Image 1 (cartoon, rainbow, N blue to C red):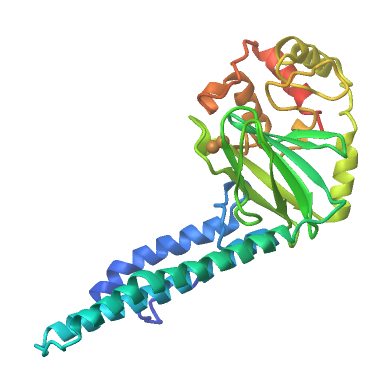
Image 2 (cartoon, rainbow, N blue to C red):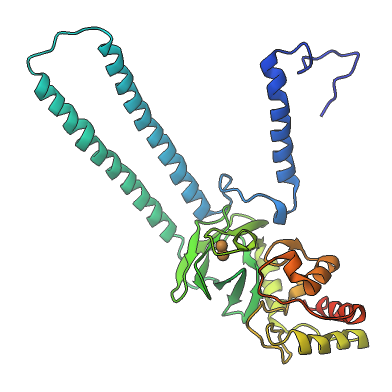
Length: 353
Ligand code: CUA
């Protein structure tokens, strides 16, 4: 950005500028600032954006939306045009024609029955075509991911790869991935606006949605169905990777994390087994709890508390000691560890990758 220098007078929204310009300039500055920040922010802070689709499913939904807006706008213009014509004619007294009643009835047929049926038929056909396009993403022998909604986090399984993780969906770019969705408790909805249409997770049944992303990138996903106190903070990250990077990740993630190597880490593991293992699982250990997220790759995840906080030592420490302070209503209870114990537990958690 250039700043207006004294020697180079520029048209600015200063005292000389017209009133409307002076009033609007701060609005533009705020808008540009907001969009600029949004574009530069890390993925976990960026506002999900369905208007810039980055994958086939989202593009079909976007095209459908544009089509509906354009067609709806056309019908709106037609109706308003007719209304204005009638109002204009009413201003001038016109002789009532002999067949006025028959004409009126024709208008009722045309505007009240034929037009709505025509419009709804066109919209319905277009929506069916979009649904059919979404189905065409389906491909056999592709990656399958099962997602289970919990209050308020996402359990994520890769059944063929033997991977269980949470709150971070990793998929390869450029190939369709089949997501099977269900819920452990109440109705949630899984949505990465840049990638695919939203779909509900229902207790006791499975829904299916296909995701295909054009290129690698990280997108923020959200729960799109009100599900209780922390609904707004039931988020996740969708990490789209190059195929080789994804294969590498899947291979390394399928292995249990390395065991602790120092006395400090081993003490942390013992503390974990005594305090946390009834709710959380870690591959290769006796911890097999299923109440909370599987923590086998905790240190490799980008966020904590279902996409809410960046995953770093400070936030992890805060989360372990006072989860209710960081996410009120979360089912995780506070732990009663002293400073040394907390440090040991954190040292152990930070080798889980
Ligand atoms: Cu889960 Cu809203």
